[in-house]
Image 1: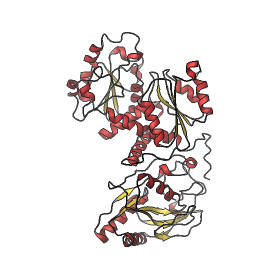
Image 2 (image 1 turned 90 degrees about the vertical axis):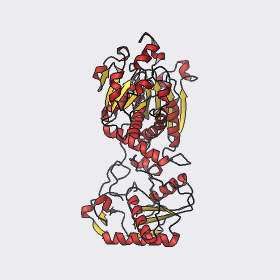
Image 3 (image 1 turned 180 degrees about the vertical axis):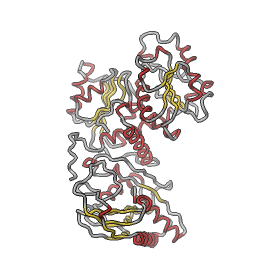
Image 4 (image 1 turned 90 degrees about the horizontal axis):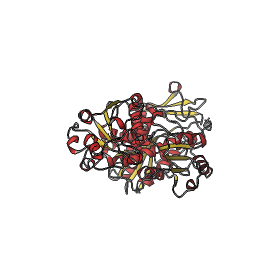
Length: 202
Length: 315
């Protein structure tokens, strides 16, 4: 997600670090932790497109199983708030969908697939402040791969994966890729041009 | 996308769809928000260079740029050095020297934005040049059609009226053709431009025959200010044959919509009751104009300004 870093790689030569059942277990645990900390009445899950939205929906489904409460789920596109547009060029926007009840005085749980530099989260915090004033903002990620460039810390982490900067992390989800897994692979030597599709993130 | 937006014909199908999709995402991102502002173009300067009168287009571009946090400088020919005889080129170079990143230009001479694009480094956006083109109007019209009817491809679109003096008609024909709609131009023979047969559309002189099979009817303003000669006997006769009144509107299919780029001559090309009916998208078009222009400004200005292709920062 960051200009200086390789973001693409070849998933076929990457090795799995989380299998489907690990992903499922991690999401179930995150759902429990969210409810344990906040209850389920005042929260709204906002996924960061594209895989963050899918993960947010899955966590909401698990909370519905645990607590019998429908938690509002939305999507928050942060493209317009990024600080690297001028370095990497414009990209197509992703849909934003804020639940009808809004976010004022609710606990917003941002959901993303990989936490890396922290710049995406910073953009999301800026976007949130333009939308309303949540009671609190928390962060859930499936993978924390380290290398933060901003003082950002996740509240709920599926798996900490120590990585080197030259490696790439691929989060595969059934809805997009036909299977659930997290792969760790060597980097491409050269980054795709700015317009490269972001199908395989970070 | 190109660095400039000069003609609707320059847009590939993918470019045009990217603009429409981006506009829809902009709409969704700002819907229901109390702070209708995005920080994306902070520090960029957009100059509105208007040599011709305009309310909606200039304001629309201004609102769009401001919603993206760009700085906007409005420049109108009246009360400027142009009235002292300064040329277009000198005016543009002056504005560029002050650090503008994009120039939105309207000019009474067809082709003025093309000339401008060769002189300055920033992006040039054509906001209407003479009787030639008005690409953002065509984009917002296509966006309105897509929002109302769910598609553009395969739509039967009738563009009716003063095609000769209309930049909206030409841009719409080019863009709608790219997007796969079928356009029929309806006008008296005197109000058709030379060479209209080469346009990618059908031509008809009979409005009543076209209406029953149209999904979209776009009425054009009769541009009295550009008419130096007799193009039709009387306004009343024009209105009788080519105006859209309630009776004619009733012959449209049930879900057809009526569009007008504005400003309207009520009672000439469009009757008041039609303009205010539920089929009319005229007010919607204005609102959509802001979203579409935001999308255009974002796509042209949001990324790398340097055009030398030096995006090697990443590697």
